[in-house]
Length: 247
Image (cartoon, rainbow, N blue to C red; front, side):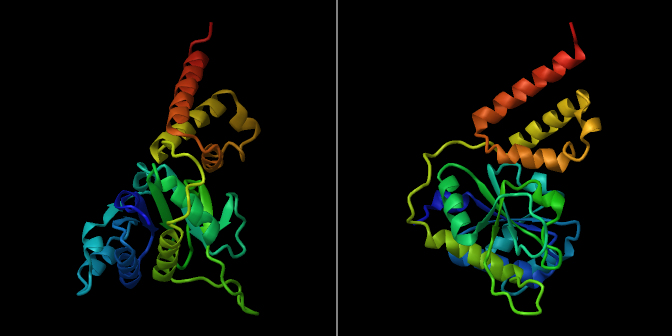
């Protein structure tokens, strides 16, 4: 069974959710399974305010926080997991089924805050939002003939993902607990590495692979713990200093 501390480390992030009913459905699912940390990334605040004014709005909605960007919303999270309906989009991240991903999330919760990102029902998560994720998780859906791809609405998707965490809560951790790097640390590594690549001319020779989203994905695939991330920050800072102060 998940401890209260582990439940508190689960952060649900809704990116560009505009329907108050959907936001309310996510909040109700979180309340039902014992989770409380809801964050919204949106430049359209009316949806949250409308949901908060609903008769059945819960304490989850009252405590929901708004952020201007995904990196701000997940800065204190050490594992960021994106959810996707797969479809025909080309995915550049490791992709796990709900059952596989649930076990990985549970293992991380022993010592780290985990963000579960959900995009809008219309467009899902953007490529930029996905670049902040360590990996992706999908809910297997029945594919009907003539239908491009099936997907759940926002409330259903959040409920199923949170239920999977509860269902697998008795599964032993996959690894020994360790303090993983936060999203803020990983973003600093990304920024410094991008500066180094630009400084040595790599970005001019291979512009596609030096794009910020590509560098960000590469850094997250390294699966750095907090100590290693901070070592890399020190190493990259020293490299930049040496580049600016040649002998």
